[in-house]
Structure formats: structure tokens, C-alpha cells
Amino acid sequence: MKKLLCINIILLLFSYSCSNTRKFTITYKEPSAKILTLKPIIVRSLNKSGNHVKSILINELKNNGYEIIQDIEITQNLTKPFRASQISPTKDFSEVFVSMELDHHTEHNILQTTKVRLSYCNNLVEKNKCTHRPGSVRWQNTITRRSGKIYITILNAGKDPVEIETAVVAESSGIIPKFTNVALSKSIRAAIRNEFKQYFFRTITVTPDIEIDKMAADLIEANLITAAAMRIDHEESGYKYYYSMGLIEESRANYTGAKMYYSEGELNTGQKELFADSIKRVNKFINK
Image (spheres, rainbow, N blue to C red):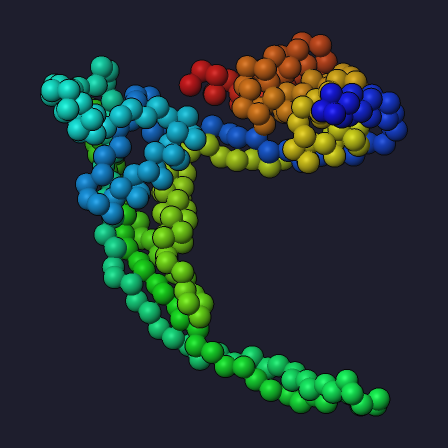
């Protein structure tokens, strides 16, 4: 069944030859404005609440291309049953210390009212079965709020420490409000992304000033990238082919593949400036 479906998709891609074209929108990443460090990073928590920040920060650093290595203290705890106590990293590293101070939950109630239409119906009568009148529903909406501060210290050997202090707020509401853990995680992640934005990739959404095969454009925007690449390979030529395929590979973080298409486009078409800028962009990832 799956094989038949794949065959049908391929037949659709190559038999549908309508020449309609349109612009397309695609997302790719740009290198960070600054490099946090070229060394591996150890993230350490200074208090219990800081563990929450630590796990989110580690994920964000990994997603932005930084190498994370195991905290020495955790490794020592893991190896203690085997009577191994001398643990040290095998290469130079940078350190990031995190902590978080949280206030106690605060709650307050708000009396809320909603107007409703009340109906009474008697199906035993033939006419005017229902009567209506206005009414209102009242309830207590409880708002739970928790706020705090995150403290981050970045230590790179030979450089001054970078101190970051930022506030976080978590809020939940309802007749029976949920715990604020999910809201707190979202607030921490947003704070980290804001404070580290100069060190993190930038997500760029771009609509190139070219039109390609409409079906390929539809597939790109539906995130069916492999199918889009097959369609472009079949329908496009010249600089549109090289540029579209390069953007597709770049959106998949295949920067070597993207550079290959951009380089061939620079060599084989007259759009030198367009491809030179794209090559310069992907080279920052390749050479990192």
C-alpha cells in the first residue's frame, strides 16, 4: 500500500505539467551576530530552582549549534559507586552558572458575569413550545501568579564574565487554575531567547523576488520539502533552479548542499551577486 502511494505521488509530481507560477515563502536561519564561545560549554545550577533554567538553557544552546559537555559534579556522583573520584574534562571549556529565585504563588479572585439566554420548552403543546428570557451566570475566576528572577553568569577564560539578570512571570487562570509550571517554562524560554539573541541563530522568513512552478511553491509552503525538490528538479532551470534548490537545502540546515547549488548557480548563470551573498551566508555555518 505504501509503495503504491509513493508511485502515485511520483506520477502526480511529473505528470502535472501546468505552467502556472508564483512566488513562495521559505524559512531559513542566519548566523548569530556574536559567538558565545568556540569551546564546549558546561552549564551548572547554583540552586534547586536553577535546575529548571539549566535544562531549558542547555536545549537552547544545543539547538543553536553549541557543544554541551557533562557537568563534572554530576559525573562524579554517577561514578562514585565505582570508586572513581578524579574527574576532569579532557579539553578546555566555558562555564555558565545559572540560578533562579522565585516568589511564592499569589492568588486573587475576580467575580465575572456572562449574559445568557434561558429557554424553557414544552413539546406537548402545538404552538409556542418555548419561552425565553434573559439571564446571567456568575463565577469566581481565580488568577494564580508567580514571578521571579533568573541570574546567569558566563565565564570564558581570558574574558570578563558576562552577567545576565532577567525577570520571569508565570500566570494561570480559571475556575480551578492549573499549576504555573508550563507557563513558567514558557517564560524562562522566552527570557533566555531574548537575553541570548545576539548569540543565537536568527530565523528568517523570506519571499524571494522570483516565481517558480506553482505546485513546487505549494509543496514548499506545506513543508513537503523532498517533494518540492523533486518538482523543481523536473520543472525549473537556470538561476531559478539553483537558487530554489539552494534555499531548500538551507532550510534543512544542509549548508554544504546549499553551497553546492549556490556555487553552481554563480558559475553557470548571470546572477553573480545573488549567489555570492547566499554563499557568504552559508559559509558562516560551514566554517563555524
